[in-house]
Length: 383
Image 1 (cartoon, rainbow, N blue to C red):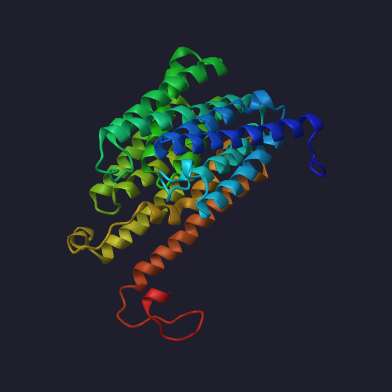
Image 2 (cartoon, rainbow, N blue to C red):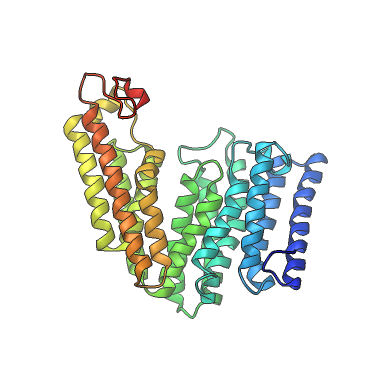
């Protein structure tokens, strides 16, 4: 591969990987043409790709070739999805971004593990073992447990229980073989990882669990390995997340999926960030919710059909801050990167707070607003 900083051996291995993965997709297409259900061929290809990703540290001596493969398949799968190619992996869920999200997640996971320190490879490999095996198993069980469609959390109870069980078992194997932790630490970390991964899988829509599940697992295991997160703190963070999500949903501030995502964010703030990161989050969400309640009775609004905030709104308000927290949680301690991440975190929350307050206050006035772009009166819908 001229022009690429790959050795001859690496170039041949990358070419072989492209041919092999292409052959896997081709196998899925052939099996579908022979009458196998598209959902089955999709699971087959998903499992094969996930296992290949988990094996890449054994096949390659450095992460660069894996970055290259992930980039190629991100573009290829996005193109195939847009043009309705490869129905063996796209026909079962035409609205899903899962085939794009998976290689994208590899880029993120590599950046948090192998590119920083080789001793984090257990987290990278374990995350993709879970994705490769737990996700298809949950899909298979969920498909057979109901034909009535997804629940509000985009998952069935039997499917989620299956995912949690497989994720726990694989986590025990990965942590037991890849770390020097004692049995209690392995079981505790595996339990926490399974709960986090199952929650993320349940709330992720349109195939984005293929991105968020491995990233979430890395964000649990790496801080535990580095000593910046303890098993007890992980359990406490999960309890805080459950409490926050339950209160937010019970108060009609968030719908079910929004409450689940908000609970995961709250757990991340407490577990990964600590007081310095949790306080700005509490201030933002607390004051924003207080303003909403002062201006309007949420229970009356819900009774009148006014929708509660969704997971999309939670991510719109907290997504950038969440990403900054995640990045800071996996970089080596101290330094300008950590300070920069915290600055981005606080700045993102401040911007979201300004937007929320402007919306809550501005909508209380009956007169038409002024557009800052044109200087003229306009409808609220075009702001």
